[in-house]
Image (tube, rainbow, N blue to C red; front, side, top):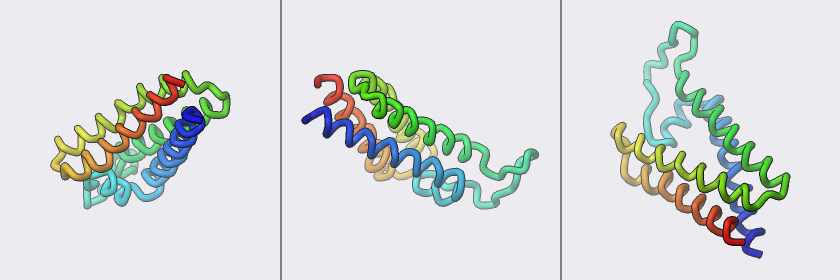
Length: 130
């Protein structure tokens, strides 16, 4: 039962991360604001033509992270999923630190990124103890 609940939470996190990643690719300025750091309002293109290359990189990272979760769920590997989720919890902790160091609010850093890390760690613990 606990494995099913933790797996379901992991799946929701995986799909959610994929959706957030797609948002970074399609609406980078809005996604950056939701992340807790405003994008450069000028939107001046770089020499390669992209005004937000770091936002696109984050979008790809998020999509792939979500796919990893889905792959582990599809292969019914709860222990390995638990290990992956524990390792992946470092991402929102890092995101919280980035928001704080970049002038973002504590509410965003802890309320979004900190809470995400806590949920990921709880799912990981449940999967590892099952």
